Length: 266
Image 1 (cartoon, rainbow, N blue to C red):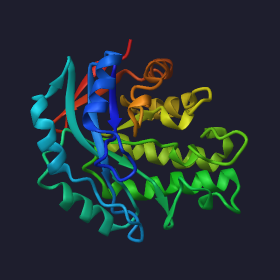
Image 2: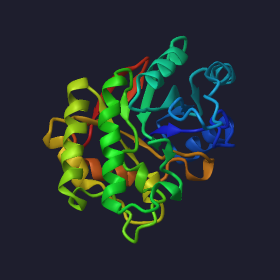
Image 3: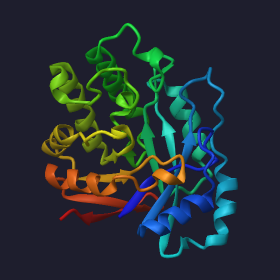
């Protein structure tokens, strides 16, 4: 298996060292991991410096591209937003970084980080989730340099509702918004990530969303634990793979220098 969403202390919200993450990957017998530290220009008021990718690359040189059988890829998780300045700043920041892989994620809606309770205050679940998906759809065309859309269900990760799941049957408008997202991704030749972190200790979800993605022409996914600490690296990747298989997704992808290699899901 692979883990294509791994953070280190180069992300402002992680204290994990490179060596800790690599050791965890080796213990699990992973085939490949990709470091995807944060590059965020979506929220000008936040004090969250983008990852120093040059320094991380320098530290990774000692491993020569692998660690105890685990191939190492270098990427970034960028924050998308529906305004041109965010895309321009992000693209300029990455210009000198010869990335293998870039995740495009949405974290902030209308200036509010959806990770925190304030986003959900005075909103219904349907309203909060719909606005999140609609903002993904509005943002995507500006970010044609991503590899995949990251954690489409991030808004649900710490949502205060009794049933947190991101589901298409929450609202016809949510299904409609996802339809737009997936048509856009397919037209751009991009995939989506199955990110296991939002499930936390609960049963996996997302089969309905993945089936819609497939029905609209989606062909590949990546798998990621979104690990900000080594204890959760690789978490529930087997379930993510099974979910993709059940949804009929034909391939998962690994990347080198932004070029995908498609591997059959069987």
